[in-house]
Amino acid sequence: MTRLSVGLGLFLLAFALRALGADYGYFHGDERINDAAKVLAGQIVPGQHFYPPLITYLNGLAFGGLFALGLPLGWWGSPGEFRAQYFSDPTVFYLTARYLTAVIGALIAPLFFAIGRRVGLGLWPALTVGLLGVFFPLGVFMSHIAKGDVALATATVAVFWALIARLQAARPGRWDIWLGVLAVLVVSFKQSGVFVLLPLALGLAALLIRAEGVGAMARSMGRALLTVVLLWPVLNIGILLDFGNFLAFQKIQTVMSLRTGGGIWPGLTTLGLRSLGLVWGMTPVFAAMALLTPPVLMLPACALRQKPALLLIWAALAIGTLTLALLAGPRQPEHLWIASFAGFTLLGGLALAGLIGAPGRAGQAAAGALARGAGLSLLGAVIAVSEALAPPMWQETDAYIAEHLADEKIMTMAVTHLPQRQAAQQMEIARWQRLAEKYDTPLPEMAEERRITEDARGAVFYIAMPTVLYGLEGVDEDDPDFQAQPHAWPPQRAEWQLDHWRDQGFDIFVVKDPEFMRSQVDSALMRGFFSDLHARCAVVATFEPNKPLFLEREIAIYRCGPG
Image (cartoon, rainbow, N blue to C red; front, side, top):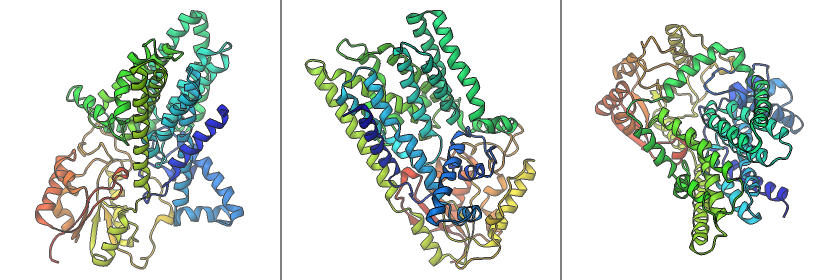
Protein backbone atom coordinates (compact mmCIF):
# COMPACT_ATOMS: atom_id res chain seq x y z
CA MET A 1 0.00 0.00 0.00
CA THR A 2 1.25 3.48 -0.85
CA ARG A 3 0.81 6.48 1.40
CA LEU A 4 -1.52 8.03 -1.16
CA SER A 5 -3.79 5.00 -1.34
CA VAL A 6 -3.94 4.70 2.45
CA GLY A 7 -4.70 8.40 2.82
CA LEU A 8 -7.42 8.23 0.17
CA GLY A 9 -8.97 5.17 1.80
CA LEU A 10 -9.01 6.86 5.20
CA PHE A 11 -10.58 9.98 3.69
CA LEU A 12 -13.34 8.02 1.93
CA LEU A 13 -14.16 6.03 5.06
CA ALA A 14 -14.22 9.19 7.16
CA PHE A 15 -16.42 10.97 4.62
CA ALA A 16 -18.90 8.08 4.52
CA LEU A 17 -19.32 8.23 8.31
CA ARG A 18 -19.77 11.98 8.28
CA ALA A 19 -22.14 12.10 5.29
CA LEU A 20 -24.41 9.31 6.50
CA GLY A 21 -27.58 10.82 7.94
CA ALA A 22 -26.85 14.34 6.67
CA ASP A 23 -30.60 14.84 6.16
CA TYR A 24 -31.38 14.25 9.83
CA GLY A 25 -34.63 16.19 9.85
CA TYR A 26 -33.65 19.62 11.16
CA PHE A 27 -32.13 22.88 10.00
CA HIS A 28 -29.65 23.98 12.67
CA GLY A 29 -29.86 27.61 13.76
CA ASP A 30 -26.11 28.12 13.33
CA GLU A 31 -26.15 26.99 9.70
CA ARG A 32 -26.04 30.34 7.87
CA ILE A 33 -27.39 28.95 4.62
CA ASN A 34 -29.17 32.19 3.77
CA ASP A 35 -25.91 34.16 3.94
CA ALA A 36 -24.18 31.55 1.77
CA ALA A 37 -26.95 31.78 -0.82
CA LYS A 38 -26.59 35.56 -0.91
CA VAL A 39 -22.89 35.17 -1.78
CA LEU A 40 -24.04 33.96 -5.22
CA ALA A 41 -25.74 37.33 -5.67
CA GLY A 42 -22.55 39.17 -4.75
CA GLN A 43 -23.45 39.92 -1.11
CA ILE A 44 -20.21 39.10 0.71
CA VAL A 45 -21.06 40.88 3.96
CA PRO A 46 -22.84 38.32 6.17
CA GLY A 47 -26.01 39.13 8.06
CA GLN A 48 -24.36 38.10 11.34
CA HIS A 49 -20.77 38.43 12.51
CA PHE A 50 -20.68 35.92 15.35
CA TYR A 51 -18.12 33.89 13.38
CA PRO A 52 -15.74 34.71 10.50
CA PRO A 53 -17.26 34.50 7.00
CA LEU A 54 -14.96 31.98 5.29
CA ILE A 55 -17.24 28.97 5.77
CA THR A 56 -20.08 31.08 4.33
CA TYR A 57 -17.99 31.85 1.24
CA LEU A 58 -17.10 28.17 0.78
CA ASN A 59 -20.76 27.20 1.07
CA GLY A 60 -21.61 29.88 -1.49
CA LEU A 61 -19.09 28.36 -3.92
CA ALA A 62 -20.62 24.95 -3.26
CA PHE A 63 -24.06 26.35 -4.12
CA GLY A 64 -22.59 27.60 -7.40
CA GLY A 65 -21.50 24.04 -8.11
CA LEU A 66 -24.95 22.79 -7.11
CA PHE A 67 -26.55 25.15 -9.62
CA ALA A 68 -24.23 23.95 -12.40
CA LEU A 69 -24.91 20.31 -11.51
CA GLY A 70 -28.67 20.77 -11.44
CA LEU A 71 -28.95 22.38 -14.89
CA PRO A 72 -28.23 19.27 -17.03
CA LEU A 73 -30.11 17.07 -14.55
CA GLY A 74 -33.27 19.15 -14.97
CA TRP A 75 -33.57 20.17 -11.32
CA TRP A 76 -33.92 23.80 -12.43
CA GLY A 77 -33.61 25.60 -15.71
CA SER A 78 -32.61 29.11 -14.71
CA PRO A 79 -31.30 31.20 -11.80
CA GLY A 80 -34.90 32.14 -11.03
CA GLU A 81 -35.92 28.51 -10.64
CA PHE A 82 -32.83 27.89 -8.50
CA ARG A 83 -33.89 30.72 -6.21
CA ALA A 84 -37.45 29.40 -6.12
CA GLN A 85 -36.13 26.01 -4.98
CA TYR A 86 -34.44 27.67 -2.02
CA PHE A 87 -37.70 29.20 -0.82
CA SER A 88 -39.93 26.21 -1.57
CA ASP A 89 -37.67 23.59 0.05
CA PRO A 90 -34.08 24.50 1.03
CA THR A 91 -33.13 20.94 2.01
CA VAL A 92 -30.81 20.46 -0.99
CA PHE A 93 -28.92 23.61 0.01
CA TYR A 94 -28.47 22.39 3.57
CA LEU A 95 -27.33 18.99 2.33
CA THR A 96 -24.82 20.57 -0.04
CA ALA A 97 -23.31 22.60 2.80
CA ARG A 98 -23.27 19.58 5.10
CA TYR A 99 -21.57 17.40 2.50
CA LEU A 100 -18.93 20.10 2.10
CA THR A 101 -18.51 20.11 5.87
CA ALA A 102 -18.15 16.32 5.77
CA VAL A 103 -15.46 16.60 3.08
CA ILE A 104 -13.49 19.10 5.16
CA GLY A 105 -13.99 17.05 8.31
CA ALA A 106 -12.89 13.82 6.59
CA LEU A 107 -9.52 15.38 5.74
CA ILE A 108 -8.56 15.02 9.39
CA ALA A 109 -8.11 11.25 8.97
CA PRO A 110 -5.34 11.34 6.32
CA LEU A 111 -3.74 14.19 8.30
CA PHE A 112 -3.58 11.93 11.38
CA PHE A 113 -1.97 9.24 9.22
CA ALA A 114 0.48 11.67 7.60
CA ILE A 115 1.60 13.04 10.95
CA GLY A 116 2.08 9.49 12.22
CA ARG A 117 4.38 8.72 9.31
CA ARG A 118 6.32 11.96 9.75
CA VAL A 119 7.11 11.19 13.39
CA GLY A 120 8.43 7.73 12.55
CA LEU A 121 5.52 5.32 12.86
CA GLY A 122 5.40 2.34 10.55
CA LEU A 123 2.56 1.86 8.11
CA TRP A 124 0.24 -0.13 10.35
CA PRO A 125 0.66 1.94 13.55
CA ALA A 126 0.19 5.12 11.47
CA LEU A 127 -2.89 3.56 9.87
CA THR A 128 -4.29 2.92 13.35
CA VAL A 129 -3.75 6.58 14.24
CA GLY A 130 -5.46 7.50 10.97
CA LEU A 131 -8.47 5.41 12.00
CA LEU A 132 -8.71 7.51 15.16
CA GLY A 133 -9.26 10.44 12.83
CA VAL A 134 -11.88 8.46 10.91
CA PHE A 135 -13.79 7.59 14.09
CA PHE A 136 -13.23 10.87 15.98
CA PRO A 137 -16.79 10.98 17.36
CA LEU A 138 -17.19 14.70 17.93
CA GLY A 139 -15.97 15.28 14.38
CA VAL A 140 -18.45 12.74 13.02
CA PHE A 141 -21.30 14.39 14.92
CA MET A 142 -20.38 17.99 14.10
CA SER A 143 -19.94 17.18 10.39
CA HIS A 144 -23.74 16.91 10.27
CA ILE A 145 -23.98 20.66 10.99
CA ALA A 146 -22.75 23.07 8.32
CA LYS A 147 -20.75 25.53 10.41
CA GLY A 148 -17.07 26.32 10.82
CA ASP A 149 -16.18 24.19 13.85
CA VAL A 150 -15.29 21.06 11.87
CA ALA A 151 -13.14 23.09 9.49
CA LEU A 152 -11.44 24.69 12.52
CA ALA A 153 -10.43 21.25 13.80
CA THR A 154 -9.11 20.11 10.42
CA ALA A 155 -7.17 23.33 9.86
CA THR A 156 -5.68 23.13 13.38
CA VAL A 157 -4.43 19.58 12.80
CA ALA A 158 -3.10 20.70 9.40
CA VAL A 159 -1.07 23.39 11.20
CA PHE A 160 0.47 20.66 13.37
CA TRP A 161 1.34 18.65 10.25
CA ALA A 162 2.96 21.67 8.58
CA LEU A 163 4.88 22.57 11.75
CA ILE A 164 6.46 19.11 11.92
CA ALA A 165 7.21 19.19 8.20
CA ARG A 166 8.82 22.63 8.61
CA LEU A 167 11.15 21.34 11.33
CA GLN A 168 12.17 18.42 9.11
CA ALA A 169 12.68 20.41 5.89
CA ALA A 170 16.10 21.13 4.45
CA ARG A 171 14.64 24.08 2.51
CA PRO A 172 11.93 25.42 4.80
CA GLY A 173 10.67 28.40 2.80
CA ARG A 174 7.57 26.78 1.35
CA TRP A 175 6.66 25.27 4.71
CA ASP A 176 6.83 28.70 6.32
CA ILE A 177 4.30 29.87 3.74
CA TRP A 178 2.15 26.80 4.33
CA LEU A 179 2.17 27.51 8.05
CA GLY A 180 0.98 31.05 7.37
CA VAL A 181 -1.77 29.86 5.02
CA LEU A 182 -3.03 27.23 7.45
CA ALA A 183 -2.90 29.64 10.40
CA VAL A 184 -5.07 32.07 8.45
CA LEU A 185 -7.53 29.27 7.73
CA VAL A 186 -7.75 28.48 11.45
CA VAL A 187 -8.71 32.01 12.51
CA SER A 188 -10.89 32.48 9.42
CA PHE A 189 -13.04 29.53 10.47
CA LYS A 190 -13.25 30.57 14.12
CA GLN A 191 -11.50 33.26 16.15
CA SER A 192 -10.93 30.99 19.16
CA GLY A 193 -8.17 29.21 17.24
CA VAL A 194 -5.86 32.08 18.19
CA PHE A 195 -5.63 30.70 21.74
CA VAL A 196 -3.72 27.69 20.38
CA LEU A 197 -1.86 29.47 17.58
CA LEU A 198 -0.19 32.11 19.77
CA PRO A 199 1.60 29.73 22.18
CA LEU A 200 2.36 27.45 19.23
CA ALA A 201 4.06 30.30 17.37
CA LEU A 202 6.11 31.30 20.42
CA GLY A 203 7.19 27.71 20.98
CA LEU A 204 8.08 27.25 17.31
CA ALA A 205 10.24 30.36 17.46
CA ALA A 206 12.12 28.87 20.43
CA LEU A 207 12.65 25.57 18.61
CA LEU A 208 13.93 27.36 15.51
CA ILE A 209 16.36 29.48 17.52
CA ARG A 210 17.78 26.36 19.12
CA ALA A 211 18.03 24.45 15.82
CA GLU A 212 18.84 27.16 13.27
CA GLY A 213 19.71 30.39 15.08
CA VAL A 214 18.02 33.74 15.62
CA GLY A 215 18.44 34.95 12.04
CA ALA A 216 16.90 31.85 10.47
CA MET A 217 14.05 32.03 12.98
CA ALA A 218 13.36 35.67 12.12
CA ARG A 219 13.30 34.94 8.39
CA SER A 220 11.04 31.94 8.86
CA MET A 221 8.56 33.72 11.11
CA GLY A 222 8.66 36.74 8.81
CA ARG A 223 7.63 34.65 5.80
CA ALA A 224 4.76 33.10 7.76
CA LEU A 225 3.62 36.46 9.14
CA LEU A 226 3.73 38.12 5.73
CA THR A 227 1.54 35.32 4.37
CA VAL A 228 -0.95 35.92 7.19
CA VAL A 229 -1.03 39.68 6.58
CA LEU A 230 -1.63 39.23 2.85
CA LEU A 231 -4.17 36.41 3.00
CA TRP A 232 -6.34 37.25 6.02
CA PRO A 233 -8.03 40.32 4.44
CA VAL A 234 -8.92 38.29 1.34
CA LEU A 235 -10.59 35.47 3.27
CA ASN A 236 -12.32 37.86 5.68
CA ILE A 237 -13.31 40.68 3.34
CA GLY A 238 -16.85 40.75 4.76
CA ILE A 239 -15.45 41.75 8.15
CA LEU A 240 -13.41 44.61 6.71
CA LEU A 241 -16.38 45.93 4.74
CA ASP A 242 -18.63 45.93 7.82
CA PHE A 243 -16.17 46.34 10.66
CA GLY A 244 -18.48 48.35 12.91
CA ASN A 245 -21.15 45.66 12.91
CA PHE A 246 -18.48 42.99 13.34
CA LEU A 247 -17.39 44.66 16.59
CA ALA A 248 -21.02 44.96 17.72
CA PHE A 249 -21.62 41.25 17.19
CA GLN A 250 -18.38 40.39 18.97
CA LYS A 251 -19.61 42.32 22.01
CA ILE A 252 -22.76 40.19 21.98
CA GLN A 253 -20.64 37.07 21.52
CA THR A 254 -18.64 38.08 24.58
CA VAL A 255 -21.82 38.40 26.66
CA MET A 256 -23.01 35.02 25.38
CA SER A 257 -19.75 33.13 25.85
CA LEU A 258 -17.75 34.52 28.78
CA ARG A 259 -18.50 33.51 32.36
CA THR A 260 -15.67 34.81 34.54
CA GLY A 261 -17.41 34.64 37.92
CA GLY A 262 -17.29 31.68 40.31
CA GLY A 263 -13.56 31.01 40.24
CA ILE A 264 -11.61 28.57 38.11
CA TRP A 265 -13.19 25.29 39.16
CA PRO A 266 -16.58 25.41 37.39
CA GLY A 267 -14.90 25.75 34.00
CA LEU A 268 -12.27 23.10 34.69
CA THR A 269 -14.81 20.67 36.13
CA THR A 270 -17.11 21.07 33.14
CA LEU A 271 -14.16 20.58 30.77
CA GLY A 272 -13.12 17.41 32.57
CA LEU A 273 -16.61 15.94 32.42
CA ARG A 274 -16.99 16.94 28.77
CA SER A 275 -13.72 15.24 27.83
CA LEU A 276 -14.95 11.86 29.10
CA GLY A 277 -17.96 11.70 26.77
CA LEU A 278 -18.21 9.11 24.02
CA VAL A 279 -19.62 11.53 21.42
CA TRP A 280 -19.11 15.07 22.70
CA GLY A 281 -15.79 14.24 24.36
CA MET A 282 -12.60 12.28 23.65
CA THR A 283 -13.65 8.97 25.28
CA PRO A 284 -12.18 8.14 28.71
CA VAL A 285 -9.05 6.64 27.11
CA PHE A 286 -7.95 9.76 25.26
CA ALA A 287 -9.15 12.05 28.05
CA ALA A 288 -6.65 10.23 30.27
CA MET A 289 -4.01 10.38 27.54
CA ALA A 290 -4.49 14.15 27.32
CA LEU A 291 -2.82 14.25 30.75
CA LEU A 292 -0.41 11.35 30.21
CA THR A 293 0.94 12.26 26.76
CA PRO A 294 3.98 14.28 27.97
CA PRO A 295 5.38 11.60 30.32
CA VAL A 296 4.69 8.88 27.76
CA LEU A 297 6.46 10.84 25.03
CA MET A 298 9.50 11.32 27.26
CA LEU A 299 9.90 7.59 27.85
CA PRO A 300 12.97 6.25 25.99
CA ALA A 301 10.83 3.30 24.85
CA CYS A 302 8.44 5.63 22.98
CA ALA A 303 9.88 5.35 19.48
CA LEU A 304 8.79 8.65 17.95
CA ARG A 305 10.76 11.37 16.21
CA GLN A 306 10.18 15.10 16.69
CA LYS A 307 9.32 14.75 20.38
CA PRO A 308 10.05 18.44 21.12
CA ALA A 309 7.54 19.42 18.42
CA LEU A 310 4.93 17.02 19.82
CA LEU A 311 5.46 18.37 23.32
CA LEU A 312 5.10 21.91 21.96
CA ILE A 313 1.82 20.98 20.28
CA TRP A 314 0.58 19.46 23.54
CA ALA A 315 1.57 22.57 25.49
CA ALA A 316 -0.14 24.90 23.00
CA LEU A 317 -3.31 22.80 23.13
CA ALA A 318 -3.22 22.74 26.93
CA ILE A 319 -2.75 26.51 27.18
CA GLY A 320 -5.48 27.23 24.63
CA THR A 321 -7.92 24.75 26.16
CA LEU A 322 -7.42 25.90 29.74
CA THR A 323 -7.72 29.55 28.70
CA LEU A 324 -11.03 28.88 26.98
CA ALA A 325 -12.29 26.85 29.95
CA LEU A 326 -11.49 29.68 32.36
CA LEU A 327 -13.16 32.25 30.10
CA ALA A 328 -16.26 30.18 29.38
CA GLY A 329 -16.77 28.83 32.89
CA PRO A 330 -19.39 26.08 33.00
CA ARG A 331 -21.09 27.31 29.82
CA GLN A 332 -19.31 25.05 27.33
CA PRO A 333 -21.22 24.00 24.20
CA GLU A 334 -19.96 20.82 22.60
CA HIS A 335 -18.51 22.55 19.54
CA LEU A 336 -16.18 24.66 21.70
CA TRP A 337 -13.74 21.78 22.13
CA ILE A 338 -13.65 20.10 18.74
CA ALA A 339 -10.18 21.37 17.77
CA SER A 340 -8.71 20.72 21.23
CA PHE A 341 -10.17 17.22 21.49
CA ALA A 342 -9.01 16.37 17.97
CA GLY A 343 -5.49 17.50 18.84
CA PHE A 344 -5.35 15.62 22.12
CA THR A 345 -6.74 12.48 20.45
CA LEU A 346 -4.03 12.73 17.80
CA LEU A 347 -1.24 13.15 20.37
CA GLY A 348 -2.59 10.39 22.60
CA GLY A 349 -2.82 8.03 19.65
CA LEU A 350 0.73 8.88 18.53
CA ALA A 351 2.13 8.38 22.03
CA LEU A 352 0.46 4.99 22.46
CA ALA A 353 1.42 3.86 18.94
CA GLY A 354 5.02 4.89 19.59
CA LEU A 355 5.08 2.76 22.74
CA ILE A 356 3.63 -0.40 21.23
CA GLY A 357 7.04 -1.73 20.24
CA ALA A 358 8.38 -1.43 23.79
CA PRO A 359 9.30 -4.74 25.44
CA GLY A 360 7.23 -6.26 28.20
CA ARG A 361 4.11 -4.88 29.79
CA ALA A 362 4.57 -1.31 28.59
CA GLY A 363 4.07 -2.28 24.95
CA GLN A 364 1.16 -4.55 25.78
CA ALA A 365 -0.55 -1.87 27.87
CA ALA A 366 -0.09 0.69 25.10
CA ALA A 367 -1.55 -1.65 22.48
CA GLY A 368 -4.52 -2.44 24.73
CA ALA A 369 -5.17 1.23 25.49
CA LEU A 370 -4.95 2.16 21.80
CA ALA A 371 -7.36 -0.63 20.87
CA ARG A 372 -9.82 0.39 23.59
CA GLY A 373 -9.60 4.03 22.59
CA ALA A 374 -10.23 3.18 18.93
CA GLY A 375 -13.15 0.93 19.88
CA LEU A 376 -14.77 3.57 22.08
CA SER A 377 -14.27 6.18 19.37
CA LEU A 378 -15.98 3.90 16.86
CA LEU A 379 -18.83 3.37 19.31
CA GLY A 380 -19.22 7.13 19.72
CA ALA A 381 -19.28 7.60 15.95
CA VAL A 382 -21.91 4.88 15.59
CA ILE A 383 -24.07 6.54 18.25
CA ALA A 384 -23.86 9.89 16.43
CA VAL A 385 -24.78 8.36 13.04
CA SER A 386 -27.57 6.25 14.57
CA GLU A 387 -29.22 9.33 16.03
CA ALA A 388 -28.83 11.16 12.72
CA LEU A 389 -30.72 8.34 11.00
CA ALA A 390 -33.50 8.15 13.63
CA PRO A 391 -36.88 9.70 12.76
CA PRO A 392 -37.21 13.31 14.00
CA MET A 393 -39.75 13.86 16.76
CA TRP A 394 -41.39 16.82 14.95
CA GLN A 395 -43.21 14.22 12.87
CA GLU A 396 -45.02 13.07 16.02
CA THR A 397 -45.69 16.52 17.44
CA ASP A 398 -46.91 17.87 14.09
CA ALA A 399 -49.28 14.93 13.69
CA TYR A 400 -50.71 15.52 17.16
CA ILE A 401 -51.17 19.26 16.63
CA ALA A 402 -52.79 18.74 13.22
CA GLU A 403 -55.24 16.21 14.64
CA HIS A 404 -56.09 17.77 18.02
CA LEU A 405 -55.09 21.45 18.08
CA ALA A 406 -55.40 22.78 14.54
CA ASP A 407 -57.99 25.41 15.52
CA GLU A 408 -56.10 26.74 18.55
CA LYS A 409 -53.72 29.69 18.96
CA ILE A 410 -50.39 28.09 19.77
CA MET A 411 -47.08 29.32 21.11
CA THR A 412 -44.30 26.82 20.52
CA MET A 413 -40.64 26.10 21.24
CA ALA A 414 -40.70 23.01 19.04
CA VAL A 415 -39.70 22.72 15.39
CA THR A 416 -42.78 22.39 13.20
CA HIS A 417 -43.32 21.90 9.49
CA LEU A 418 -47.02 22.71 9.61
CA PRO A 419 -48.05 25.64 7.41
CA GLN A 420 -48.43 28.87 9.38
CA ARG A 421 -51.41 31.16 9.11
CA GLN A 422 -50.85 34.59 7.62
CA ALA A 423 -52.13 36.36 10.73
CA ALA A 424 -49.64 34.47 12.91
CA GLN A 425 -46.70 35.47 10.70
CA GLN A 426 -47.86 39.08 10.70
CA MET A 427 -47.94 38.97 14.50
CA GLU A 428 -44.31 37.74 14.57
CA ILE A 429 -43.16 40.37 12.06
CA ALA A 430 -44.84 43.12 14.10
CA ARG A 431 -42.92 41.93 17.17
CA TRP A 432 -39.60 42.00 15.31
CA GLN A 433 -40.32 45.51 14.06
CA ARG A 434 -41.26 46.68 17.55
CA LEU A 435 -38.02 45.33 19.03
CA ALA A 436 -35.94 46.72 16.17
CA GLU A 437 -37.39 50.17 16.87
CA LYS A 438 -36.84 49.77 20.61
CA TYR A 439 -33.16 48.93 20.15
CA ASP A 440 -32.67 51.24 17.16
CA THR A 441 -31.30 48.53 14.89
CA PRO A 442 -32.53 47.84 11.35
CA LEU A 443 -34.08 44.48 10.55
CA PRO A 444 -32.55 42.53 7.66
CA GLU A 445 -34.61 42.63 4.51
CA MET A 446 -37.22 39.88 4.32
CA ALA A 447 -37.60 38.19 0.94
CA GLU A 448 -41.06 38.44 -0.54
CA GLU A 449 -41.12 34.67 -0.94
CA ARG A 450 -41.03 34.40 2.86
CA ARG A 451 -44.23 36.39 3.30
CA ILE A 452 -47.46 34.44 3.55
CA THR A 453 -50.09 36.00 1.30
CA GLU A 454 -52.88 33.50 1.96
CA ASP A 455 -53.46 30.60 4.30
CA ALA A 456 -52.47 27.21 2.91
CA ARG A 457 -54.65 24.19 3.41
CA GLY A 458 -54.21 22.91 6.96
CA ALA A 459 -52.53 26.10 8.15
CA VAL A 460 -52.27 26.53 11.93
CA PHE A 461 -52.06 29.71 14.02
CA TYR A 462 -48.73 29.34 15.80
CA ILE A 463 -45.91 31.67 16.72
CA ALA A 464 -42.48 30.93 18.15
CA MET A 465 -41.99 31.38 21.85
CA PRO A 466 -39.81 34.48 22.45
CA THR A 467 -36.75 32.54 23.62
CA VAL A 468 -33.37 34.19 23.16
CA LEU A 469 -29.99 33.18 21.79
CA TYR A 470 -28.03 30.80 24.00
CA GLY A 471 -26.13 32.93 26.50
CA LEU A 472 -28.42 35.97 26.49
CA GLU A 473 -30.96 34.60 28.98
CA GLY A 474 -29.61 36.65 31.88
CA VAL A 475 -29.29 40.00 30.07
CA ASP A 476 -31.61 42.77 31.28
CA GLU A 477 -33.68 44.29 28.49
CA ASP A 478 -32.76 47.81 29.64
CA ASP A 479 -29.03 47.20 30.14
CA PRO A 480 -27.43 50.33 28.61
CA ASP A 481 -24.17 48.48 27.95
CA PHE A 482 -25.81 45.77 25.83
CA GLN A 483 -26.02 46.68 22.15
CA ALA A 484 -28.72 44.46 20.65
CA GLN A 485 -28.67 43.28 17.06
CA PRO A 486 -31.57 41.90 14.98
CA HIS A 487 -32.91 38.69 16.55
CA ALA A 488 -30.24 38.91 19.25
CA TRP A 489 -32.52 40.64 21.73
CA PRO A 490 -32.50 40.09 25.51
CA PRO A 491 -35.61 38.64 27.21
CA GLN A 492 -38.49 41.10 27.38
CA ARG A 493 -40.22 41.23 30.77
CA ALA A 494 -43.71 41.70 29.35
CA GLU A 495 -43.34 38.67 27.08
CA TRP A 496 -42.46 36.36 29.97
CA GLN A 497 -45.75 36.85 31.79
CA LEU A 498 -48.27 34.10 31.10
CA ASP A 499 -51.24 36.46 31.21
CA HIS A 500 -49.65 38.58 28.45
CA TRP A 501 -50.28 35.73 26.03
CA ARG A 502 -53.46 34.39 27.59
CA ASP A 503 -55.04 37.82 27.13
CA GLN A 504 -54.25 37.54 23.40
CA GLY A 505 -56.07 34.23 23.11
CA PHE A 506 -53.20 31.73 23.35
CA ASP A 507 -54.37 28.54 25.05
CA ILE A 508 -51.74 26.06 23.85
CA PHE A 509 -48.04 26.21 24.79
CA VAL A 510 -45.58 23.70 23.36
CA VAL A 511 -42.55 23.54 25.66
CA LYS A 512 -39.20 21.93 24.95
CA ASP A 513 -37.39 20.44 27.97
CA PRO A 514 -39.98 21.65 30.50
CA GLU A 515 -38.11 20.54 33.63
CA PHE A 516 -34.97 22.43 32.57
CA MET A 517 -36.98 25.54 31.69
CA ARG A 518 -38.70 25.53 35.09
CA SER A 519 -35.63 24.98 37.24
CA GLN A 520 -32.32 25.48 35.42
CA VAL A 521 -32.53 28.01 32.59
CA ASP A 522 -30.25 30.96 33.35
CA SER A 523 -33.06 33.49 33.77
CA ALA A 524 -35.30 33.99 36.80
CA LEU A 525 -37.79 35.71 34.49
CA MET A 526 -38.08 32.66 32.23
CA ARG A 527 -38.08 30.18 35.12
CA GLY A 528 -41.00 32.08 36.63
CA PHE A 529 -42.95 31.92 33.36
CA PHE A 530 -42.57 28.18 32.95
CA SER A 531 -43.28 27.51 36.62
CA ASP A 532 -46.47 29.57 36.35
CA LEU A 533 -47.42 27.71 33.17
CA HIS A 534 -46.88 24.36 34.86
CA ALA A 535 -48.92 25.38 37.91
CA ARG A 536 -51.88 26.91 36.07
CA CYS A 537 -52.19 24.77 32.94
CA ALA A 538 -52.61 21.08 32.16
CA VAL A 539 -50.18 18.85 30.28
CA VAL A 540 -52.20 17.19 27.53
CA ALA A 541 -49.39 15.36 25.71
CA THR A 542 -45.69 14.57 26.06
CA PHE A 543 -43.17 13.26 23.54
CA GLU A 544 -39.76 11.69 24.14
CA PRO A 545 -36.72 12.63 22.03
CA ASN A 546 -35.21 10.35 19.40
CA LYS A 547 -32.16 12.55 18.74
CA PRO A 548 -30.90 14.12 21.98
CA LEU A 549 -27.50 14.79 20.41
CA PHE A 550 -29.26 16.91 17.79
CA LEU A 551 -30.91 19.02 20.52
CA GLU A 552 -34.17 17.11 20.75
CA ARG A 553 -35.56 17.17 24.26
CA GLU A 554 -38.80 16.10 25.90
CA ILE A 555 -41.76 18.06 24.51
CA ALA A 556 -44.74 18.87 26.74
CA ILE A 557 -47.92 20.42 25.33
CA TYR A 558 -49.85 22.55 27.86
CA ARG A 559 -53.47 23.60 27.56
CA CYS A 560 -54.63 26.62 29.51
CA GLY A 561 -58.28 27.43 30.04
CA PRO A 562 -61.25 25.24 29.06
CA GLY A 563 -60.91 22.05 27.01
